[in-house]
Image (cartoon, rainbow, N blue to C red; front, side, top):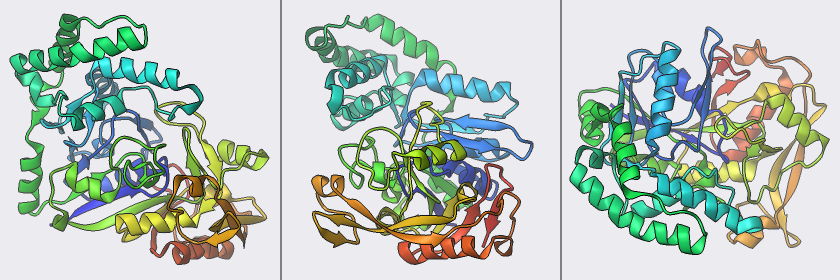
Length: 424
């Protein structure tokens, strides 16, 4: 049976949690394949309960589904324990959670270096959440990282942490004038934390492929979004991993030929959190209206999101880079009440019209959006459950997005609830 990828097609925060939760019951497995606890998904269950997930896959809210933190994820043990305990206190069964032995750990020194480095950069800061994600991925690539499997081998863990702290403490003390971290304290802390989840550390790569061979279905869940991909995003204002669909194969250990569908999540307007270029950003009262009406505050960070009109250029780019087969369009209901709704159909860069993503960093920074005005609608869409329930102008808006991005819209979100979804 195939594996299906669900990917954010903007700068993240598109509503992937709702989509995963909606689809989760149709799958035996939900796999988180990259990122760390710097991302987050909000899911509202049918009984009205609101869940803010950070590290654990959204499928945890679907009974009977096995949830996997894949090898491409970096895991903060403390954050994992807190999130797991919080779900259990609310009656969620976490027994089906599994952790890849090859996933890397976010260690205390990663968090310390992340925070002090971002402060040191000042105006040149990247906009990191300060949770050690970047430094953990740096160590992974430098081949000095600590993996979940190392928690099961104290000798290896001691060797790796001791070697890491020889350099990290030099940086903290001599460069940033901070205190050194104690080797024994770091090791003892993570070993104590590991008691809460050590039995869940397994060879998930083998288990996932065996599940596919048995005919079970897998949903691969990315965090963040396409434009935050370290290779394909708006570098350097990106995350340190690959949220794009190609990262799903690497971050789970599933061969790319097993993936037969890629669902792209697009918000009916555009948002981003943190620093970096954003051509359609609205710095006026309309931007504030979108922020308040859409509830645009980061699930995990609490940071207000920057808001702007729908950008078809980045939507089209995401469809191409990810091989998106169909789109889940979220938050269409937020746009109700507008006389007209602009869509960015291209850019003007240094006096020239361009219809695709500028190749250079400077070009994208200088991109001025070219808008096409679509007629708006005043009807409340929150109760719509079929395509015919939408007003004609809202239908035309969705159809125009399909034309501009080159991918069909297969589902439309008209509210935060699981049932507030139109399937086409």
